[in-house]
Each structure stands twice: as C-alpha cells, then as structure tokens.
Length: 603
Image 1 (tube, rainbow, N blue to C red):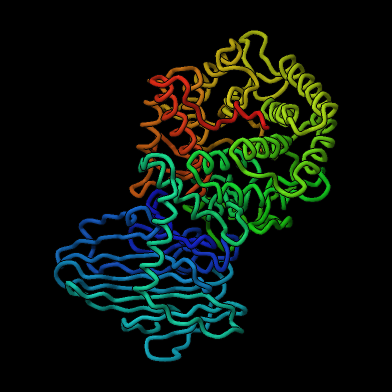
Image 2 (image 1 turned 45 degrees about the vertical axis):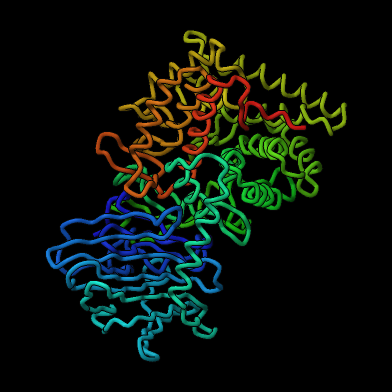
C-alpha cells in the first residue's frame, strides 16, 4: 500500500529523481530522465507495478527522517524492540551512470531487515529478466533498459520478485546500489560508495554555500529542492517529478507535471537571483530562449526537459491510480493550448534577468521584437489561461494583465529604438484601459476572473506584483478583500471559486499552496506585515517532516494533494520569505530593496 503524499521524500541527481516512502519503499523512479518511463510505479498502482523496499522485518516503533545538512542525502532511522538501524539513500552526482545507493547501518542491537525489489519497466507493466552475473551482482533487462544491482546481502528470486532477509548489528553497514544503463551497452561500473557519498555531500553543500541570504531552513530546503528538479544537461526545471498525483482523491484532475512550464519562468528566475544563484538563473533564462526559438505563434506553454515540443497526452489504463484516482496520464495536452500570459512571463524574464545583472542572451532583442509583434494582435483573443482550462477559452484578466506586462517592460528598455518604445508604451496603455474597462465588477469595484464574469481568481493577486496597479489602489484593495472572502478555506487559498465549471472538469481540488504564498506577497505590498507573517508561518508548518510541499493541501483532511514535490510551491515560498525579509529590513532601513516583479524596469 502506498503512503500519503506527504509520507514521501525526494532524492535526485539533477537528471531524474526517486520518491521514498517513510516505510522504506522507493515507489517512484523514472530512468534515465525525469520524463522517461518509470521502473518503480507502485505510487500509481500497487507493489506489483514496481518498488524497492528496505526496512526492518519487525514493525518499527518509531521512524525518523532527515536530510543530511544542506544536502539531498536522506537518512531514515527505524527503531523497534530489536534495536535501531539507519537507511541512507542518495543518488550520486557527477557520475555518468544514474544510480541509487542505499546503505543499511546498524545503530543499536541486532535488527532483522527485509528487502523486496520489484522492477517493472514501461510504467509498471513490463516484467524483466533477472540474471545473476557474478558474486553479489544481478542484471535486470527488458528491451532497451538495464538495471544492475550490487549488494553483499543474500537475495533470491521469488514470484517474479527479488527478496532477501539479513541481520545488521551495531557498527555494520550493508550496501545496495542500483545503476541504470542501456541494455546494449556494457554493465555499469561498480561504485566506490564511500567516495560517492562524500562527493555527493560536497556537491550539495557547496551549492548551498552559494546562497547569499541568511541560512533560513525553509528557504534553503526549498532552494535545494528546486536545484534537484533542474535537469542539469539543459538547465530546464520541471514542475514536479511525478505524474497523476490527484488534486482531489478519487478525482480526475490528474496531470503529468514532469515538464518545464513557461508560466513558472519569472518566479523561478527571481528565486534564484534573489538567493544569489546567478548560474542557475542564467541557465534557466538560456533554456527559455532556446525553446521559444521559431515562430512566435508556435510558442508553447510547456516543453520537455531538453526543449521537446511533442508531449502527447495518453492514459495508462493498467494502473489503478493513486488511491483509485483515475485516469493516470502521461504527456500533457496543455502544451497545445493558447496561454497569453506566457508572453508576459517571457518579457518579464528578460527584464528581470537584465536587472539582476545577467548579460543578454544571443538574439534576445530579435526574439523580443518578434514576440511583441505577434502579441500586438494576439492579446485581443481569448485563451485557456494560467490554470489551463479545458473548457471554452475566455478573456482571462490575468492573461490580459500579463500581455500588458510584456509591452510595459519592453517600453522601458533604454537600448530599444525610441520609436519601438513609443509604440510598445501605446499598446500597454491600450491593454491597461481595456482591462480596467472590462475586468472590473461595477458593483464591488474589484477585478474578476474574466471579462463579464463575477468569479474571483487567486491569479488576480499578480496585478500589484507585476505593477499593473499599486497595492494601495482601491480596486486592488477590493480585489484582495474579495479573494479572501470567496477563496479562503481554513486559512488557505483555492485557485478560483468552488463549484464553477469554467475549466470543463468536475469540481473538487485542494487549496493551491503557491496562491496562498501570493497572498503573503499581497499582504506585504499592502504593509499588512503581521498578517503576512502569520500566514507565512502557517504555510511553513504544512511542509512534511523533511520540508517538502505538494501542489495543493486539503486543510479539512490535513493532507497534501497533487504532484510532489511541486516546484511552484517551493518557488513561491522562497519569494515570499525574501519579500518578508526585505519588508522587515525596509522598516528599519527604508532604502533596502530586492529584485521584485513590480520593479522590473530593464536597462
């Protein structure tokens, strides 16, 4: 049986990642990339769909987990009446092969350990051949895929599984390594485990030491998680390493998030820039510039980790889904949607990158002009919006505001031709007026989700953040108040009003954690710092025991929902934490500021 979403922890090597449950079972792993087919798929099915369990045979009385200081090396301590053991899990960094290392170390007494390895390639369906090829070495092969298992523990085959039992005394360590390779290539070389562990610790700790803000643990754990979700060969960052974890248990809002979304672009860039990670910010900006090359009308909302455009959506009918939440989807049809907000995100990324000290990417000026040329007409059209509705396109207020952002940022470019700046400023004024004319509820004098609607949307909180109107404007104050009135549930924000069918899907989802952090930002801009601090403390209390967040949270059942861990949630935490930090400093030192969206005048 799989655990609750918050029962999982992440290990990774910036190429792929695995999810490990508190019970010692790796229930999700895709190889060789984040978006490859999984070989451990119990998370979305059952144990027969693939998992790797290592835990005490006797039920543990306590289980405690932590990441080794400022790293992605996970330690889990199991205690029972026989004694205690520590399982150390990590994926070596800087190696050619992708591997998982698991070390079982005795701490007290003599503890009997059980292990069960069930590998099922192709999302839990393909049963491989297992061969013993030498002392302590097994190969697992199916089609193009090979996994090599090495361990000193006694193992045997049983009912298409590899199982074993052994005892560990205090001071003893039993190692396991599982390495991936293509089946037509040579067997992956054995790993020097001690050397690999030292190197992996150094990799993460050296990266963490580059943070230029005070070591606040929620911020650092979120930054480390974001780094782990970055695909090292290209610089792209995935939204989450999982697919089809439900936004509501038993529902059908189950999406594949193992791709890179343009909508996350500016928030991600700001998180890295404000924390001092210029290299990551530059790599992310450069990835964006590469993937959008081509006709502006063909810019997609999301791409594969190397910039792939074909992300065809299909279902895995042989999987029952997480807690019977179906369908289980692979690929994402949102790649084909029209989302006008992404053009604003791209323009804002260029402006923020320049303000943050990054040199212009090659042909960035040409890219900007091409995008804006397309957007001069396209902004007037309806779209599917930031929440990727699967109903009829609408004139979403947030989308329109982001098109305004695109022209506003460009109009402030000192390097651009005066004639271009003048034209872009005129278009920005036109869009601004159009929004203020059509997106305001006349009775409540607040912005609404879409033209002619009365619904509220948490994305409206972006309006003061991007500088569309100041936070002190009465319409913005009214909007924040109406968002609180209609979307707050037990202190957390939903994306939009419950029960509406705007997205063409049955209602039912949790509170969206990133939106709740946006409310923190709105409070900061309104100088409501006590409320901002209180909400931020509540949000940080919702992280699981190792500091990770899913996409959503259900405050009624007190459990996480949606794909996990979710980059957007961690990005939002970092940016809210920094906004609060600088708001406190500004009260003491009025001239202190940091890079933020509504101060994005590019030079």
